[in-house]
Image (cartoon, rainbow, N blue to C red):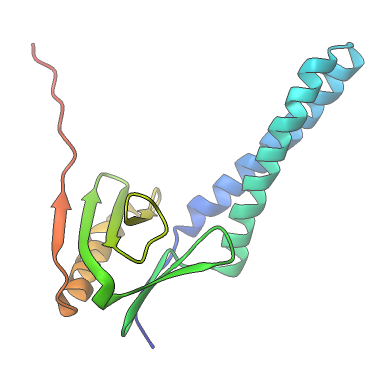
Length: 166
């Protein structure tokens, strides 16, 4: 049973997919132009660029079609769906610390655990809402309540604010 499910900003995901689609079309025309004008090295490099463009276009399309959530808080564990087909599952009892960083468009969650495969010992989850920024405060409050309910230590990290001196 899920206590809290944080969903993607699907407008952002659709726009990213569409931009990568347009980039793919543009690169295809670039490949044809450079190939016709005997610029084979540049055409070959553009083939590499098209591979990345198609890769990310398909990733965002699958996120949009499948409505894949960013993070799922369950009764005993946290599930982080990855780009790969393997989900990262962390038990609440294995989490040592939670760091939350908030800026104008996103919330970044860092879960410290001994069960992670990353050398830093943290699992990163980014919740980016470009078009639903008004929902970020509500989402952050819900996340904090859910983590406090499971007696996890929350460490809020604030980014440095830089001001220009006159």
